[in-house]
Image 1 (cartoon, rainbow, N blue to C red):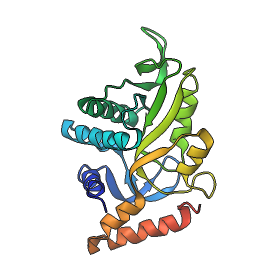
Image 2 (cartoon, helix red, strand yellow; image 1 turned 180 degrees about the vertical axis):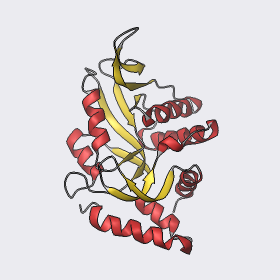
Image 3 (cartoon, rainbow, N blue to C red; image 1 turned 90 degrees about the vertical axis):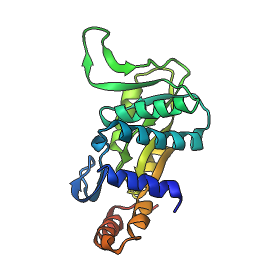
Length: 218
């Protein structure tokens, strides 16, 4: 396993973002592990998280100037931290995020931050994709930003699960909307990391059993 992947998984576990047990995903699936970006709660942690996203951004998009979009709520801090990390590395990009409720006073509107202009490209910054539900919601929201184009989504972990078909949720998103979804690590990286310590055998088996039923088949 690449060193940065191990470092990232250790970071997620140490921050309480990666947990093992019995959880229910947004898709409604019962899952044996959970990725909760809401557990990031200190300046050091969110700074580190932004650095991982920035590394992935540079690896995949280079110095491309795009607008970062963070879906409320968890995507807000993720997109801001990514923008800060990119700026510190010499790429100053704008960001914005949505409101859960449309504001009808003051400046009004559904978004906070930068207002994307026609012809600009947008990159979605999310935490995870399970069945693709959250990304489809984001695309519906962003469809009201005329003249722009989403060119990529970055997430922390690819769960390697099937979406609405037997295909992987990320593959479905890519085929439906025409842009790639990139992850820092995937569930098989997590399994490999866990297998380095035999005390994790039960969690490894539970994840493998889950993937046998819900894992992407294509």
